[in-house]
Image 1: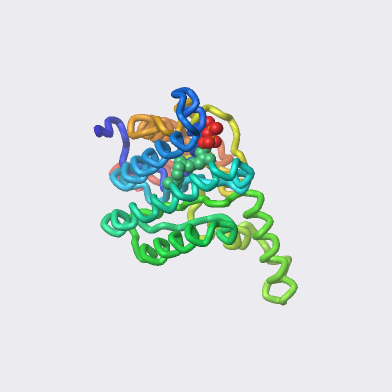
Image 2 (image 1 turned 60 degrees about the vertical axis):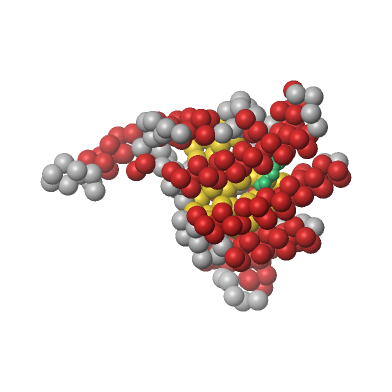
Amino acid sequence: MELDGLDKTRLPQHVAIIMDGNGRWAKARGKSRVEGHRRGKTSVRVIVEMSRRIGIRFLSLYAFSTENWFRPDDEVDALMTLLEHYLAAEQAKMMRYGIRLLAVGDRSRLPASVRSALEKVIELTRDNQRMTVVLALSYSGRDDVVRMVKSLAHAARAGKCDPDSIDERIIAEHLDTAGIPDPDLLIRTSGEMRISNFFLWQIAYSEMYVTSCLWPDFREKEYLQALLEYQRRRRRFGRTDEQLDEAVESSLDAGGRQS
Ligand code: FPP
């Protein structure tokens, strides 16, 4: 598709997506919720592919939250099966296109077959460098924080970490997202104005984009809109506009080009 107006030099490095609305998409069509998830899986494929094509370096997808375990058993089973099929079907493409797969969340709760399929693809793609897809599975931001605090507490008790030395860098290194830059852009589909326990620490300065589009309908056109909107924003990171203007001016070289 045409990427009219998109500035390839100002892409978000990391896009994170709360994929919501599969159930409503299905209900509106008299279909089963599972059918909505199936169609949502196609959106996942489309968005990964477009991200790779335009040069997004990190794409995180909130595929299954810790709260989703409370859904009816047949829906949980169907989601796990879809995930397993996705991993099996996409691994060749991930290798072909240099995509590395990572997962965040409490993997120990996943069914053994999903866990082993996931670990196989993570291992297979570990050296790929073009793009990283991060699947949030059995993930919640608070659970991530709880596990981070536990690991730091254990390290402190073992004398491997001085509590007074704990700073933002050390905390980030103990979250599931260690080594992954914070999201620049957080997209949520289906219009809800909530974070729903997705990344908490990591989105401190993310730009948020909420669209009423339901996830199964979120395809290239809608993704492009989100990226264009991101490029219209000015990220200030707590600074003033004047400070940013000064920073841009002082980074202009003698020829008037921005360094
Ligand atoms: C939210 O819709 C979506 C989910 C809970 C799961 C997301 C799963 C997929 C997109 C399919 C498979 C994923 C991968 C990575 C292959 P909802 O059911 O909460 O929708 P509703 O709010 O309208 O009920």
